[in-house]
Amino acid sequence: MTRVFNFSAGPAALPEPVLREAAAEMLDWHGSGMSVMEMSHRGKEFMGILAETKALLVELLQIPSNYKVLFLQGGAIGQNAIIPMNLLRGRTSADYVHTGEWSKKSIEEAQKYCTVRVAATAEASQYTHVPKQSTWDIDPNAAYVHICANETIGGVEYHWTPDTGDIPLVADMSSNFLSKPVDVSRFGLIYGGAQKNIGPAGLTLVIVRDDLIGQALPITPSVFDYRVLADNDSMINTPPTYAIYIAGLVFKWIKAQGGLAAMAELNRRKAAVLYDYLDATGFYTSPIAKEDRSLMNVPFRLPDPKLDAEFLKGAEARGMVQLKGHRVVGGMRASIYNAVPVEAVQALVAYMKEFEAARG
Ligand SMILES: *Cc1c(COP(=O)(O)O)cnc(C)c1O
Image (cartoon, rainbow, N blue to C red; front, top):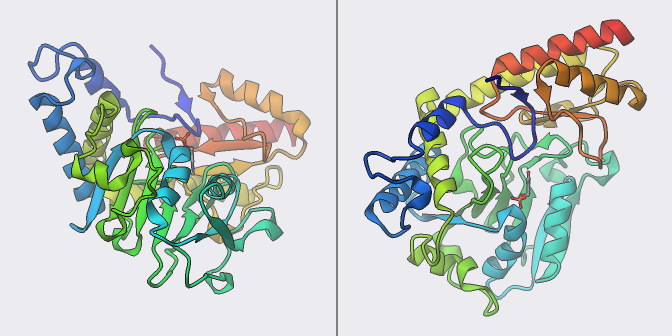
């Protein structure tokens, strides 16, 4: 068996020890005689898995007691609709900061439910930076302010937390969730799909301050009403049981690595291997403002797009896959989530140097 260096943006690499543990427990979880996939979601085994998974997340992120942790389906894109349904609370508009493709999607979806004001946009730089808070124009009547904490496609990340005063801050953390410590108390709501840094696709996480829930629009589907979900411990219907189990194994793995501070340190070192080289080379370029560079998704370009196919072919021959950039921005993108080892980044940079020597 050979495992590749997987630079996929999502679904993405999972920690190998987690996959091994899941494989070992596939037919018989802890003597239950069943796979987790085969368990009743209301049985004591799965209820235990759910409780432990939630407790680990609370511990890792030090989630304050006035926040609810919800496990849903529908992905982050589903949340783009579910958030306004739940958080408008009688207001008619919400503010959004536009930093790229994912915030654009959030804006377009929210427009079905409310007036969307763009409080700040990175359009002037073609979405290669995060607008400084001093340039934001926040409406005091906004129901909330929405940001995308890490633009997975563009490679732009907030390395600071906006201060929106009394207006709840809502963040899409799909692609940098659990990559570093986060002060949850600064946010009204944090959400993300699992398939980047947490586990398999099919699970969506929402962490929401409890005073913000309970006023969902009457049209809100029950399975997406945060109050109903919170009151039923995310069990109003069958939750994505296997994905929750794998997320729990990933949380345990993160804890064993030393928690989120250790994860952040590792991610900084890992990203530096690639960014230091991008800064030194005259061959590859990175369009992103240095202070806003994502530690999770690193887009870069070759000097001529005609070289892209050859670069990708050589990478694949060396066991490095999924480096093609998103079609919207072109070029290459290396996604280097928690589970991608530093050896993968070192191998990529070694190959980039080799390619530069041959073609530069
Ligand atoms: C992947 C991603 C999404 C989309 O998530 P789905 O789970 O496919 O709905 C949304 N936002 C960001 C920042 C992402 O990286």
